[in-house]
Image 1 (cartoon, rainbow, N blue to C red):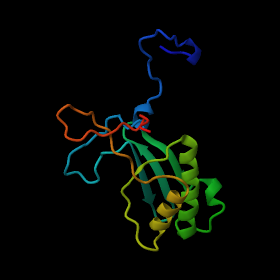
Image 2 (image 1 turned 90 degrees about the vertical axis):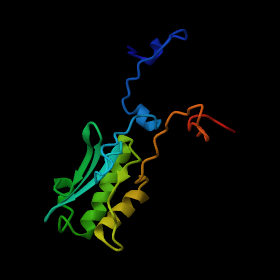
Image 3 (image 1 turned 60 degrees about the vertical axis):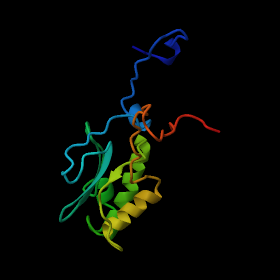
Length: 162
C-alpha cells in the first residue's frame, strides 16, 4: 500500500487508491439504480434531504452507501440563538447559507435534489441560496464505457482536446 507520495517509484506497476470518493469525482463510479418503479429513485451519489417539523428544519447531504455526510439543523444552538422561530423564512435562508458553507468545506459541490420549489416559498428560497453559494443541485451523468459497436463515443472529461 502507498503510505506517502514520495514512496511512489517510476517503475511501479500499480497504486492503491486510498480516496474512496475519487471515482465519484471522475464520474466513473457505479450508481445504484434500485427498481425503476421506485419513487424517489436511488440513482445518486449524493442527495440533498430537507426535513421539516413543527419547530425545526434539518438539511442533510446523504451518500448512497455511507449515509449522512453533512447535517445542519435549526436545532443547533449556534443557529437557534440567532433565529426568532425555527421554521420560518429567515430560518430557511440562514440554514441554506450554513449548509452550503459546510458542503463547500467538505468539498462536495454537486448533489441530487428531488425537492420541488414553490414560487415564493421557503423551500424555493432555500434552494436558491444554496445554488447562489456555489452548489450545483444536479449530479453529472455517469460515464459509461465506450464499446466498439457504439455509434457515438463520448469524450472523457479528463482528456485535453485543444
